[in-house]
Image (spheres, rainbow, N blue to C red):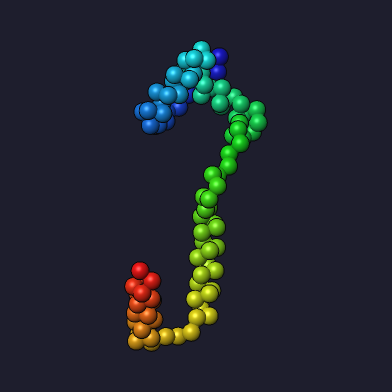
Length: 100
């Protein structure tokens, strides 16, 4: 038998309990399930199931790209004085109050 190595991981207590119940119903324990995961990972040379982001989740790269685009748009904006900015803010606030 090959030399053994200890693998430790921290998981949410409730998640562990739920998963333990599932594996027990399948007739196995968590260490066996983890070994199965490792063996399958080795066989497929990767994660042994599809891994995709949920709809609507933005990756770091996408967020940085969006931020870059905003900076480029801001560069094209006309220069405004503090008085002009405050006047524009006051106009928007007045329009909101009138819409209520």
